[in-house]
Image: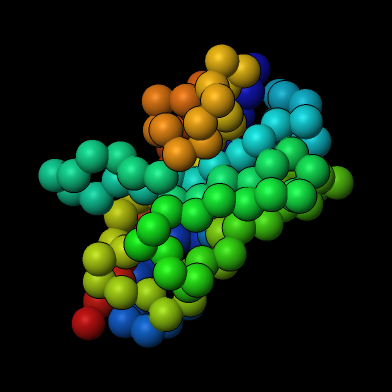
Length: 125
């Protein structure tokens, strides 16, 4: 079965950096488009970033503003999210997910079939 395990979330100060990782198993990772999404308490889950299976294309949510970088290592079946210049509004649980075969829009959170359990990011001022 598909398993996604996120790591790297922790408490960090405003302006700091974090690198999240997501280790995948149980799927053909090298052929899967991957995404990072997040959910803050009381808010809807939102799109953060996505990367094409071959890393040729990446997509970011509007709020990212060049602060985050998504990347992947297909040899390790791992996708990363480098987050710089973190703001308090970035505090959330961050999830990695696999785009579903039916999905045509990586920005659509409903288009992801498999999700990890998430890793908590807290940005303190």
